[in-house]
Length: 288
Image 1 (cartoon, rainbow, N blue to C red):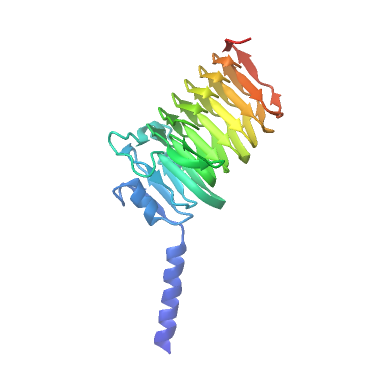
Image 2 (image 1 turned 30 degrees about the vertical axis):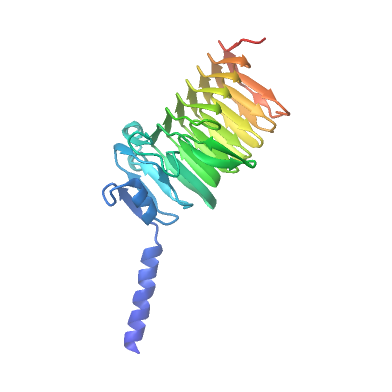
């Protein structure tokens, strides 16, 4: 009887220890970021040390934290020094060419923090019954995710969201820089069919698209605030395109953006959200 009691107590202790959120170091404990993700469970934190990692990673539908050491010490140098690079000349195309893929997470949100995400080529995703190449840097599909203090640069996709594409997701994007990304729709960022998403304190610069050079927000309710759009280019909405939604644009600056229609912002098809306390200067629209 005593032996059974001891074994039961030991089993309970082991189960409790296994369930406790872990902090996993990559590449100290695992040789790749993906291997660290594969070993994790929802609630775990993966800390990526400074380095240049040629990988494309999938969070495997886990509500985990994926972060640089910025999360530990708030040293902003970690952001530019911790690079996840989807360069397909180094890592050949397989199932996905988005640098980070986040899907099917509900409840607690995943967190991506303090990373540079670059050179992604996008993944194939069905959007409104049509297959598109989307989300060059980060692809969020049916997921709750927060993206904070990241640099999203030099990514592209053929169709939607050169830097980030969010579809049917609830995203919170804060203090991020979108630079030199390209796509047909939403050079820097494209948010489709999302309600309750927030974009705050972000910089969109030198992004290019056919529609929505800096960002394209369509078919949902998004709050875009305290952000700057500069030197972005598109045929429709050099800085920002808003389509068929009730989104709000609050306290944003639009400077030096270029569009055929709508140098700073272009709204159509029932874009009835408010544009409040925004500044526009040196934007150019070819068609007046």
